[in-house]
Image 1 (cartoon, rainbow, N blue to C red):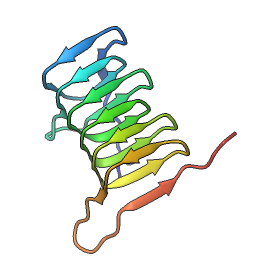
Image 2: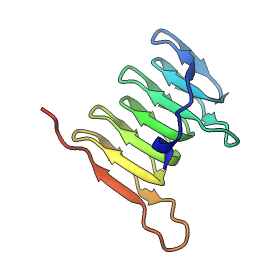
Image 3: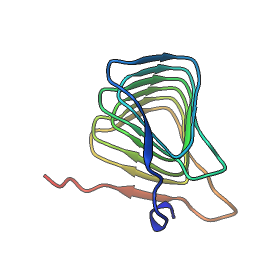
Length: 131
């Protein structure tokens, strides 16, 4: 899966005080701490990682290979390889994933749709509370 390969470096940042209006396309890695009103798409030709921090809000569709969410997303989520939902994650939209890791406290208001090739079942992992 994604962890066997070296993850791409996070080369772009949308800072906490920033607000983007419109679609945002990226390659390698992107961290969002601010607000994005538009779709956020990772390049499908190379490995991508998207981190949405607890201070971030994205209103629109998000798509990348590896997605880590600890903030708010209002729109569909498409994780081609791995979706990690941290305790403060809030998703209002349908979620498509190949593998899912969900921490206690994360909330999804929408349908979970595994990306299944053939009859192989997707990986679903409940993260243990380390407290």
